[in-house]
Length: 454
Image 1 (tube, one colour):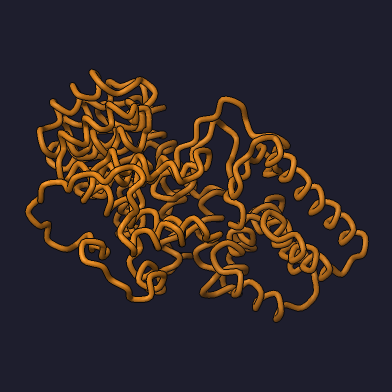
Image 2 (image 1 turned 60 degrees about the vertical axis):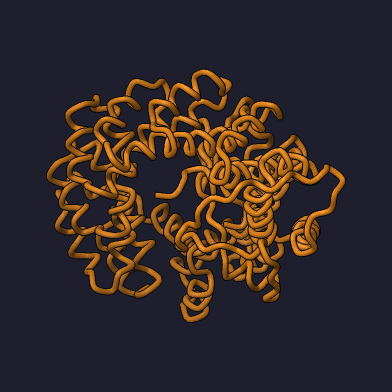
C-alpha cells in the first residue's frame, strides 16, 4: 500500500507537460517498474551549481505555472530525481526556491526524502538531522517508513523516539504502522492502539481491511470500546467500500453494532448505486429499518442519480419523509454538481418549471458560489420567482464576501472552512492542524473544510 503522506506521480500528465523530452538520469519512473540495484549517491552539486537542463526547465515551468496539478507533478518529478541522484541535502537547497508558506516546500522535501532514502538511507537520515528537517511530517514520515522497511519496525520506532520532534511523531508512526500492518496487522493494531492519536491505528485498519476485512472487524469488536468502533470501522471498510460494497454491506449489517453500521453504510451506498449491475432500491430495502438513515439515502441517491435521474427522484420521493425531502434533495443536488455538473445541467435543461427544479437551481447556485460567483448568479437567474431569485443572489454575495474575509484573515486558497450550517466562516479556525492525505479532504477540529471549486 502506498504511503499515507504522498501523492503518486501522474505520469500521463507529466508526459504531456514535458512534451516527450527525455534526459538520461531524469526520465520519470513507473511505480510498477522493477527496482534497480541502488547506486551510490552522486556527489551533491554546490548550492549555486545549476541543475541538469531538463530538471531546470521542469522546475522553472512548475514555479511559473498557476495550475496546481501541473505544479505538483513537476515538483514531484524534480524532487524524486534530485533526492535519488544528489541526496536530501541538495534537495533542501533546491526547495528554498518554493514558497515557504504554501506547503509545496514541505511536500517537495518529503518526496525527496523518500527518494534519497532508497539510494542511501544513512546519508538521508544525516542530512535530515543536520538541516533540521525532521520537524516536517512529510520528511519524518518518509524516513520512518524507509527505516521500517530496511531495518524493521522496532528500529524505526526507536529512531522516531530518539530523533523526531513530538509534533511530527504521529506522522512518522503512521507510516511505520502501515509497513507493520502489511505482515502483522494484529501486532501493529495492538501497538497502535496504545498511542494517544488514532492516526496510526486507522492506517493499520485500512491496510488490514484491504487484506482481510472480517479479521479487521473482529479485532475492532474484540479490542475497542463502542465509541471507538464508530470512529474506527470506516477505516477498516475503506477498501471494500469501493471494491466489494455488497459483501461489505452484509458484514456491516451482521457484525457491527447499529451505531458503527451507521458510520459505515453511507460509504457503501454510493458505490452500490453507481454500478449498473446493482439495484439501489433493492439494496436499500434489504437494510434493517433502523439502518435506513437519511445519510444513507443521500449517499445512495448521489451515486444513482447520474445514471437514472428519473428513477432516483421517484425513489427519493417515495422513501424520504416529506418533512426531510427538501434538505435531502438539496444535498443530493450539491453532490451531483460536484460529481457531474454537465449531467446536472442537462437535467435542468430538460426539467419543466416547478418546485423540484427551483430547489435544484438553488442548491446548484449555492454550490457554485464557492468557486464561480458569476456562474452562480447566472444559475440563480433561472428561478421563476423574483423574490426567491433576489434572496438567492443575496445569499451568493454573502458567501463570496465571507470567503474573501476568510482568505484575508490568513486562510488558504482552495480550502474554505464552513460552520455547521455549511456557510463559510469569516476567519479560519485558530490553532487548527490540517493534514491532507493522498490529496483528499483535510481533517479539521469540528468545523467542516470544503475544497473551493469542489
